[in-house]
Image (cartoon, rainbow, N blue to C red):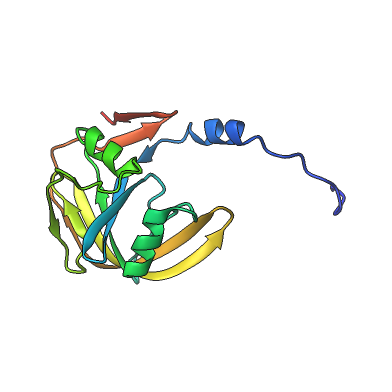
Length: 166
């Protein structure tokens, strides 16, 4: 049994990222409306949390200005991206002021953007936010959801690259 006061070695951030990069993740765009304007961010840390009640979660970095706008809005929509939406993913991952320039979208029931071409979307109200290191754990209470396309491949992120499953 290790000593309670033993010092643990620091985990190298690059090794940590590379190791966790061996776990493939789906790619989403989390969107909201802030002060009447659409905002969004690319997120790979999306997960189902609970069936009853219907809850989902994602983990944005705490210092993200986009996350601050989404948090302030009180609602968000998770858009599950298709393999052919790499350009859209890049726009959502960028630091551009207008990530929605040329992007086709409609409003969900909460007012958040639903991105045209997404495989499915999940519209939520923010239920809880928990601090976890340099990220927040955001829990969303599902308000509405829809599967839009069943015959397309999803976008997947694996070992630092985007691809698909199939």
